[in-house]
Length: 51
View 1: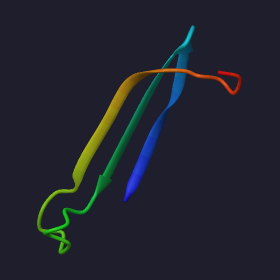
View 2 (view 1 turned 180 degrees about the vertical axis):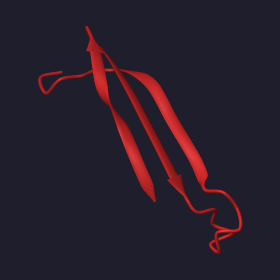
View 3 (view 1 turned 90 degrees about the horizontal axis):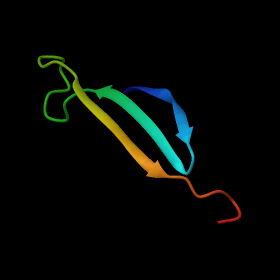
């Protein structure tokens, strides 16, 4: 599996994250199908250590 992460950005209490990754299809480990790709992107509320 390979994974990448874009550097997070923060504006006020909002944190924007993006992760992407690829892995073999669990039903086709023989390479007969292209890799499965997943992307997760979202805005999250940042809560610091004192929150």
